[in-house]
Length: 150
Image 1 (tube, rainbow, N blue to C red):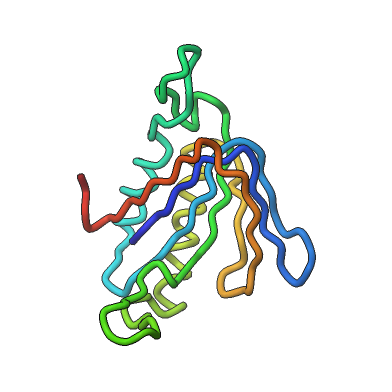
Image 2 (image 1 turned 90 degrees about the horizontal axis):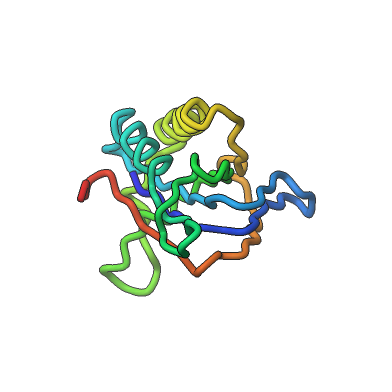
């Protein structure tokens, strides 16, 4: 499972021309699920995400977590995070999980993050054609992969 985490001052999802969800300061997190992923992968990533200290403290050092600042999360599924570009110019998505496997893990992330932060998590809509808008703060963008637990 992969998370692409972007520290944002604001972010939103629009579906069919209508605002679907939005946040102010926090994380826009793109979530990719592959067939081999398990609930343990989702739980590990969620724990790491909530504790990640990448917000600035009073000394302008990245020392505060999402919990410390009372930030928000906008969680968006993105199957293209497991694109293979080895052959040719058209990416293959063979490693991306099918919806029947990916949706329960995506929903587990939503409930896990909501429980950890003790507030609702904003989301996209799984499988929808979404338009994302964001102001990346920093910019700060971090990739986490549950197969590479560094």
